[in-house]
Image: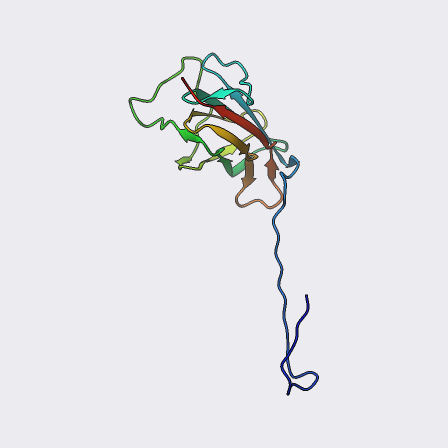
Length: 174
């Protein structure tokens, strides 16, 4: 950076402050401290989905599990940013499809569904992890980033986990 001052300034007459911020250029690696988080993308039968070959209109089930590595952890927030091109199938609507193999394995304290993310809050233990199923619909064709799931204890510093990020491809439906 080069700064030029107009004539008439004496040395020390001007103070210049520079503040720079940056964001990572790629996905951060998975990380775990006190919690672990894992995610799987499944089809209607519960089989793994090939993320390179999702078709527009497909229903994709996301299974996300958060477990404690050290006893009970209260007020854990699980944040799952959604890949662009997908919409959440709202489980509160009676018209939303239900898959028989999807069980509610945990009781979240609170669940918030948004256009671009889901947030679930619960208390967990090593013996009783939090397992969340989210139904997504592929609505837009294209190549998309899959953000990593994040879990952290809201009031316990140092208890957090970041899962794996990835990429997916949605092809036009017929």
